[in-house]
Image (cartoon, rainbow, N blue to C red; front, side):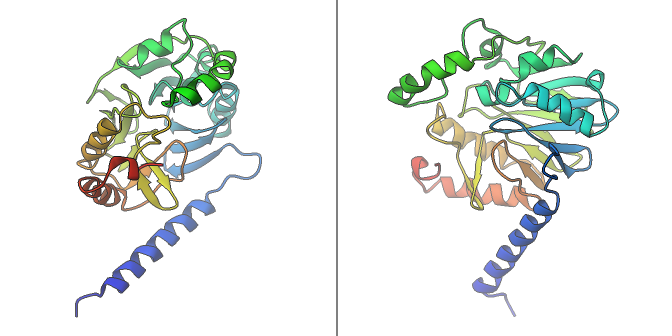
Length: 271
């Protein structure tokens, strides 16, 4: 007999509960900074966001957290059994302070080349402070003195990334240009591992996928186009910068979300 709608929903809720339980099992001890997402990929607790380590013979760092996070990332590298000299790549998903704040300090200690999408790279390398992420002009003025005070300063950009570029780590890391949150936002796809890291291109709040926050996103129309683009990819696991990952069946969830955007006001699809 065909399954009823209630049975299908029950299966979905059961699967999500199982995923949440699996993630909680990987919760780091109080003084640990890392937990494994899939073999070779670790999430790192930084100040105000999450970074990722791709660990093979060498280490690739994805995002660097707020200012003060550079030292945490170095500690996380040691925690997974590597040294600063093993860090050969740093990839930035976008040029907001909670993703590049630790970069100048980290670059002083590792021999890595730093890669940023060409649209955001000038902000990272500029002597001027990073762009204020707040879209609302009143809020932007309100927080601007604090952002000026905490700005990490310029960092070196060695590689300017574009859509479909590939970095030779973990079976091939493919760059997916996903503008909307910023002009140069990217997602990072590991096809051989079935993993996608979206940075802030999407949110995952209370089990619900959403567009990036309208408070900090430059263009929600572009963000929705990026979700539709991501929905065409195949991946099992979806990782975010501020939310718990979806460990299985993630691409189906994204396709469902992308379809829902066609009949929904975009300001209702974000938070």
